[in-house]
Length: 330
Ligand SMILES: Nc1ncnc2c1ncn2[C@@H]1O[C@H](COP(=O)(O)OP(=O)(O)OP(=O)(O)O)[C@@H](O)[C@H]1O
Image 1 (cartoon, rainbow, N blue to C red):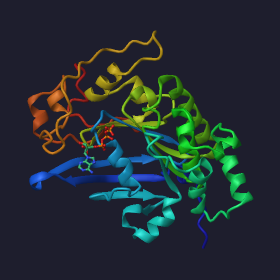
Image 2: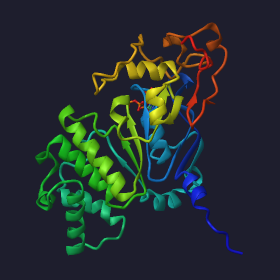
Image 3: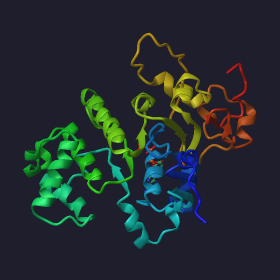
């Protein structure tokens, strides 16, 4: 008996479902770095999810663990229904082509002694592209896709500006025709003037190629126009997640409110309440009990130390991990 696929259901199944992702690193004296703790979110096919938080919140570790560039401690990452964490190293190699990463620093991620043709060509090897014309044509096609010229293929990384190097990093990631890309702070090392160009390029490519993106950033303003959904992390945990329009228009978690208050506002007619966020992020070796944000939270009460707040659904796919989320006074 054949089973008809109901389009709505197919749409509803996320391409990636991260469930309870946890990554601990060993620290000195037998202690543990709680880099990522029980993180869950979905990424729908063809959508962009922003993973946002201050430095040290565990974003990079989460992105790398999903791709198994670091081995996760616990959890699942269901990619098209297959748990990536249960695959053998050999099986994972097949999946590597479907899942790519664009790194933060385009310079250190490109081998300075290789020409661009070889850097992108190396990625093409994974798809079994023969050497010669076919391969050269594909390199030229990829360079054009990211707004560079075919003559750039014979140059070395140092001959390019930061923005151009990031375009090369993107072309390299696209070479294997991935379905899913982790973009790890791809614009934070770039001048503000070129950030927008690279963000626009990623947005265009995402639409044109139907890519699914996990976009890591420390600043909510960077992901505002690119992302369909946003996941806000703090000290390894998800504080709030939900559709972009809900999260920006009506943030519910004091941490998200603080991040929005400190982010530059592109539209000066839009006012945001200022929320003070004092001090540094605590050590993930010894995170605060209960809500990990409570030591810096302007709204914390005694009860916040007593329990890890569950990620409650507050409607429309919007989730908040704060025991005071229903309190109208905050
Ligand atoms: N290999 C490692 N060994 C020990 N601790 C690590 C390792 N990698 C990351 N960490 C720690 O895990 C925590 C989360 O780091 P991570 O780089 O994932 O955060 P992040 O939010 O991406 O920050 P950034 O924006 O600075 O990259 C940090 O405290 C970091 O020091």
